[in-house]
Amino acid sequence: GTRLALSTGLPPEIPVQASRAPADNLLAMLIRHSMTRSPRSVGPDDLCRDVFEMFQRHCIRHAAVLEDGALVGVVSERDLTRALPFLIADLDTAAADAVDVLIGTIMARDPKTCELNDPIDRIALEMQAARIGCMPVMDQGRLVGMVTITDLLRGFADHFHQADGRAVTL
Image (cartoon, rainbow, N blue to C red; front, side):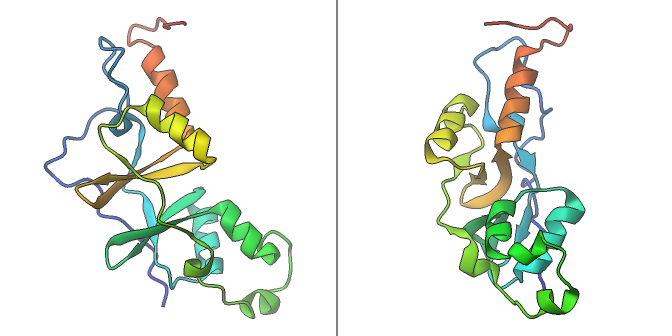
């Protein structure tokens, strides 16, 4: 059966902070301030069509692939549409049901990861260099979040827009 689930999120010992980095410290641009907490996760044996439907239902474009709680890959909406072109064409349900492609066959294995206290500028450069749109956030070997290009852009924008409404410009 399908095991689409939410990860457990941050452990209780990691304080939940606002998405905005402290305005008085322009150097404190950390992944923990910009990441998506409790990211969606799927299993390598999940069907691509089920995961595609989950992506559409929840308006997401990336998911971590977990096996026995361990990160084994990442799957993106692009991976799914490349593997299952019928999902973006309006073919009948019988044709779609005939194709049972598993996430494990299309996922990106051994994804690059980052940590909660990594600076977002360094992670942005790493993601750009690797041409990837997301990076799982790990804490002591456990998935605690996902950071996407959109999260990084929001983090930079939030960071440079001060609490009193003034914007910091470069």
